[in-house]
Image (cartoon, rainbow, N blue to C red; front, side, top):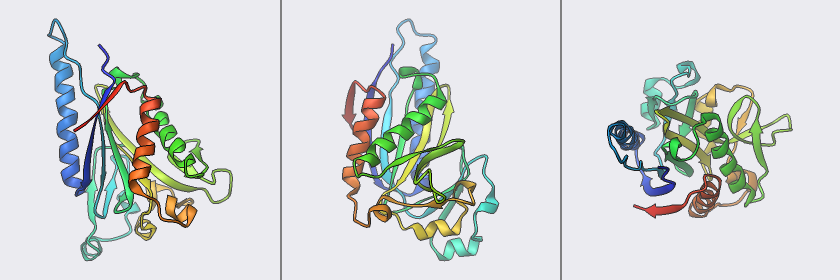
Length: 235
């Protein structure tokens, strides 16, 4: 039985490690329910979550990443009050910080579709539709994950990074959309391991302040449409 209800949560400003632990607990609970369902005559529906938050300054390195793409040593990280974590998502190194909308969809894809490539492309599409509401023309770049602006120019810029983990068709981690992020922090890394492309934010593209709550609401609307969500419940 498919369950297309989404449970939404706001974790507000939360340190990355605490958010990671909370995500992991939800992720494991869904997998455990799926395991238990195998022996039940009437399997219980699995839950789906969409979680929003912001993090204090932190660099995270995906399992396929190269630590050489972190351009600061341990002392410099401490002096600048930046956390660093190697984590279990895909992708290379990225930055999270204030002014960035971080979204963690923890979904049982068997409630929607069993296709990780389609899942990532659908997440990207929700971001593309969201940016269009602010008249920011964004797109994908073939062979690269995430969402970019000026993709046909000599200076494409990443505006949203993505990286996920999946097991038993359950997802965790997600996306980081630069709304009014301090882009200077990206100078301390090789973002996503890509040396020849820049990074941008909605505020930088529009030279205006962008309301985070409005962006979150717009993304949620497009996410629900694309994933054909039947009901949303705020926790």
